[in-house]
Image (cartoon, rainbow over all chains, first blue to last red; front, side):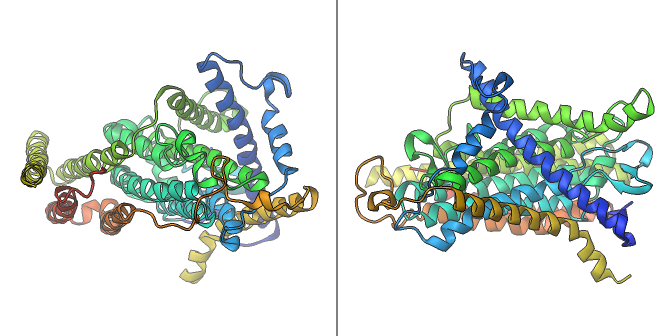
Length: 397
Length: 124
């Protein structure tokens, strides 16, 4: 088990060089992935809406993102007179840097079968195909996705304008609401892996023992919905709702500062998909075959293939579902996802402890289900009586 | 090797990447600042309000409702602080831990049910 990057155990020149190389490669890969993702989303959504999408810049319009970027780079940057200038300038940093940092803990390749923990040897040195592997990997992901709230919140607030303010308070309420569901659904994964390190979580899923079915699909669904809301992607894009808020928190941003928010948004989509793959679909785990060089790159290929599936699903959701109303959004988060994630987690914990202590599985299942159903009944009764009482008061008045 | 330096080294690469990210953003903004035109006009720095002149100030108050959700979130975040360590070391406490945690979650859910009953989660 490698708590820290094995390269850093003894610091010498070439080791530092490899770490720096990893940082640069990860950074470049992420930037290219974001460019490709913007093109991919526009192209796929266009086909779903029976349009052609970008097709002028480069083959299949693949250079469209670059063209747009260059255009935004040369545009005049406007600062509204009423804006709080320092905060207005700070917000793009707060939005973009956490988006980079989540990517650090995602294992991108390496052989995880037979307890090899994804250690590969490059230039005669053993290392991991991930930029860093802190003990608290998953908590780090949660922390960084909380930081993203600051970027959106401060951007909207500092604009000194009405639409962005509305967008940002909505964003704050929505993102922290679903953050709770995100954390609670993640607990099921921790039960299986017994560790917060992403490397350990992926190691625990080797040999088709993916968390997707090992935790019984429900945590995955809750996590996926919560992640979509956390990303402010359709159908949860009330934060930017073009039709009512003219862009939400970034209405007042123009030129490159707007481009940075745009970049951060797509970067978050990619990193969140990567996190879902890591947590539930075994990361780089997959069948291995062929000659040596093929075996070396196959884990990365599997990882990218799984990633692509999620990126497509995110675009597919955007092309299919209409936006939720605000009360529906809050109902879904607080009244369905959170109790569901909590109940499922307790049930799984009961099963796991039952296994350790040698209890009868059937008894654990029946007792657990009865207890949880009883709890749900109590909650619905409590809420029902309160609602009836309120209705009665309203009738009298 | 002291444990403090171990702990710091775990985050060394994270810190490097964070630094690279922030530096790149700064560099981009700086380069763009040198290259892009800047022709200031009073009309350009007006707050956007769908094309008409803004009415009143943009520094307004927003609804208290949003604030209640922030409070509720704190409740669940505190909960996570206790549940995360337990979930990773499940076998250490066995059945006793399960009952304890069941009671803990029940008490926390009471908070959510209270807010629900008061109609805080309703959005009208």
